[in-house]
Length: 129
Image (cartoon, rainbow, N blue to C red; front, side, top):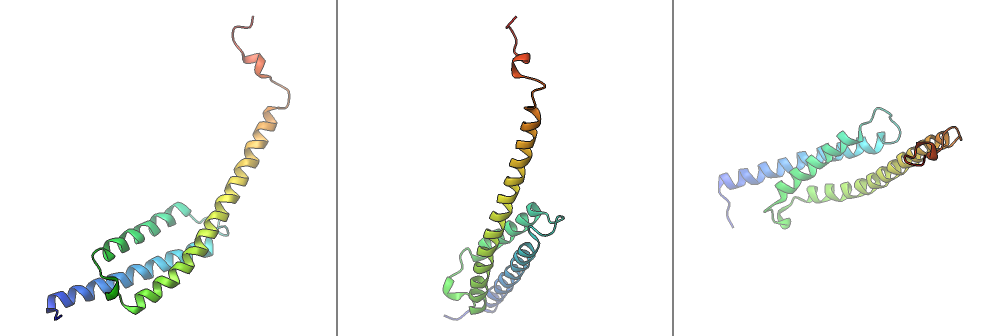
Protein backbone atom coordinates (compact mmCIF):
# COMPACT_ATOMS: atom_id res chain seq x y z
CA UNK A 1 0.00 0.00 0.00
CA UNK A 2 1.35 3.39 -0.99
CA UNK A 3 1.33 6.21 1.60
CA UNK A 4 0.94 9.84 0.72
CA UNK A 5 3.46 12.38 1.99
CA UNK A 6 1.05 13.54 4.72
CA UNK A 7 0.39 9.97 5.88
CA UNK A 8 4.12 9.24 5.91
CA UNK A 9 4.78 12.38 8.00
CA UNK A 10 2.06 11.30 10.44
CA UNK A 11 3.70 7.88 10.85
CA UNK A 12 7.12 9.49 11.36
CA UNK A 13 5.66 12.01 13.82
CA UNK A 14 3.85 9.29 15.77
CA UNK A 15 7.00 7.14 15.72
CA UNK A 16 9.04 10.03 17.12
CA UNK A 17 6.44 10.77 19.80
CA UNK A 18 6.39 7.11 20.89
CA UNK A 19 10.20 7.09 21.08
CA UNK A 20 10.16 10.29 23.14
CA UNK A 21 7.54 9.08 25.63
CA UNK A 22 9.21 5.68 26.01
CA UNK A 23 12.51 7.44 26.71
CA UNK A 24 10.90 9.75 29.27
CA UNK A 25 9.15 6.82 30.97
CA UNK A 26 12.43 4.92 31.14
CA UNK A 27 14.17 7.91 32.76
CA UNK A 28 11.37 8.26 35.33
CA UNK A 29 11.49 4.55 36.21
CA UNK A 30 15.30 4.53 36.42
CA UNK A 31 15.21 7.58 38.69
CA UNK A 32 12.56 6.04 40.92
CA UNK A 33 14.39 2.71 41.11
CA UNK A 34 17.58 4.49 42.16
CA UNK A 35 16.04 6.84 44.72
CA UNK A 36 13.14 4.97 46.35
CA UNK A 37 14.03 3.93 49.87
CA UNK A 38 17.39 5.71 49.68
CA UNK A 39 16.64 9.40 49.19
CA UNK A 40 14.48 10.93 51.95
CA UNK A 41 13.68 13.86 49.61
CA UNK A 42 12.25 11.57 46.93
CA UNK A 43 8.55 12.21 46.28
CA UNK A 44 6.90 8.94 45.28
CA UNK A 45 3.56 10.62 44.64
CA UNK A 46 5.06 13.01 42.08
CA UNK A 47 7.00 10.18 40.44
CA UNK A 48 3.84 8.09 40.15
CA UNK A 49 2.03 11.04 38.58
CA UNK A 50 4.78 11.32 35.95
CA UNK A 51 4.68 7.57 35.25
CA UNK A 52 0.90 7.65 34.93
CA UNK A 53 1.10 10.55 32.51
CA UNK A 54 3.60 8.72 30.31
CA UNK A 55 1.50 5.55 30.33
CA UNK A 56 -1.58 7.57 29.40
CA UNK A 57 0.31 9.24 26.53
CA UNK A 58 1.50 5.85 25.28
CA UNK A 59 -2.05 4.51 25.41
CA UNK A 60 -3.21 7.42 23.28
CA UNK A 61 -0.31 7.03 20.84
CA UNK A 62 -0.84 3.29 20.45
CA UNK A 63 -4.60 3.63 19.99
CA UNK A 64 -5.35 2.74 16.41
CA UNK A 65 -1.77 1.66 15.74
CA UNK A 66 -1.26 -1.73 14.17
CA UNK A 67 1.26 -3.61 16.37
CA UNK A 68 2.89 -4.93 13.19
CA UNK A 69 3.81 -1.34 12.27
CA UNK A 70 5.73 -0.66 15.47
CA UNK A 71 9.41 -0.12 14.97
CA UNK A 72 11.63 -2.95 16.21
CA UNK A 73 13.43 -0.44 18.41
CA UNK A 74 10.18 0.41 20.19
CA UNK A 75 9.45 -3.24 20.82
CA UNK A 76 12.95 -3.80 22.19
CA UNK A 77 12.64 -0.70 24.37
CA UNK A 78 9.25 -1.88 25.69
CA UNK A 79 10.74 -5.26 26.61
CA UNK A 80 13.49 -3.45 28.53
CA UNK A 81 10.87 -1.28 30.23
CA UNK A 82 8.93 -4.38 31.22
CA UNK A 83 11.93 -5.63 33.21
CA UNK A 84 12.50 -2.22 34.78
CA UNK A 85 8.82 -2.00 35.71
CA UNK A 86 9.01 -5.43 37.37
CA UNK A 87 11.96 -4.21 39.46
CA UNK A 88 10.06 -0.99 40.15
CA UNK A 89 7.01 -2.91 41.37
CA UNK A 90 9.19 -4.90 43.80
CA UNK A 91 10.86 -1.73 45.11
CA UNK A 92 7.57 0.14 45.52
CA UNK A 93 6.09 -2.86 47.35
CA UNK A 94 9.13 -3.05 49.66
CA UNK A 95 8.87 0.69 50.30
CA UNK A 96 5.16 0.44 51.14
CA UNK A 97 5.86 -2.52 53.42
CA UNK A 98 8.49 -0.46 55.26
CA UNK A 99 6.11 2.50 55.56
CA UNK A 100 3.42 0.21 57.00
CA UNK A 101 5.92 -1.26 59.48
CA UNK A 102 6.94 2.21 60.70
CA UNK A 103 3.29 3.28 60.95
CA UNK A 104 2.52 0.17 63.01
CA UNK A 105 5.46 0.90 65.32
CA UNK A 106 4.25 4.46 65.87
CA UNK A 107 0.66 3.33 66.39
CA UNK A 108 1.75 0.72 68.93
CA UNK A 109 3.98 3.22 70.73
CA UNK A 110 1.10 5.69 70.98
CA UNK A 111 -1.25 2.97 72.22
CA UNK A 112 1.32 1.78 74.79
CA UNK A 113 1.77 5.36 76.00
CA UNK A 114 -2.01 5.67 76.41
CA UNK A 115 -2.16 2.34 78.22
CA UNK A 116 0.20 3.37 81.00
CA UNK A 117 -2.63 3.22 83.55
CA UNK A 118 -2.91 6.95 84.15
CA UNK A 119 -6.38 7.09 82.66
CA UNK A 120 -8.94 4.40 82.09
CA UNK A 121 -11.82 4.27 79.68
CA UNK A 122 -14.27 3.94 82.58
CA UNK A 123 -13.41 7.45 83.77
CA UNK A 124 -14.86 8.84 80.56
CA UNK A 125 -18.05 6.79 80.44
CA UNK A 126 -21.22 8.83 80.90
CA UNK A 127 -24.26 7.82 82.89
CA UNK A 128 -22.68 5.50 85.41
CA UNK A 129 -23.20 7.71 88.40
